Image (tube, rainbow, N blue to C red; front, side, top):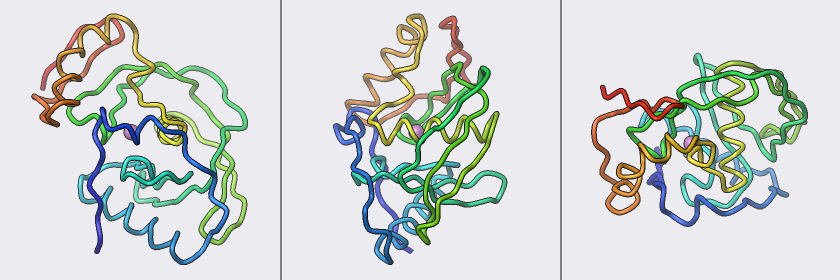
Length: 180
Ligand code: NI
């Protein structure tokens, strides 16, 4: 089993836009397996290639024991609104209440090169939007309200400088903080 180090906020690779994948081959399948192993080791429910320092347009996920890989994904349609306390393996210890579209239609390819479409909402929909953001160099902190940003500033700076995170905290849209 091979696993990667997970890149933490402040690492420039997390801000770069990934390149579309042109070759879906055995090497890519191995990368997806190693990314899933990395994700399970944390554990997490989604991991995008830039989070392990790889500038390719794919992410892996496993929600409710349903693992998957999406290659060159795009959001085709989105609908509604849903508020949820979102976390990220690259921002350990911090959860932010963020409102995004609820339902999305995502199109991409699987490891056999077949086109797949996923119509998902709530946690599934959030997972897809969050991971797709990573492929465009966007972290969830770019979706914060001003009070959230203020409340998290010190913790985010500490994470960027020395990767240490304090106790797990949920930061609500109004900037209030709940510490575990
Ligand atoms: Ni993330």
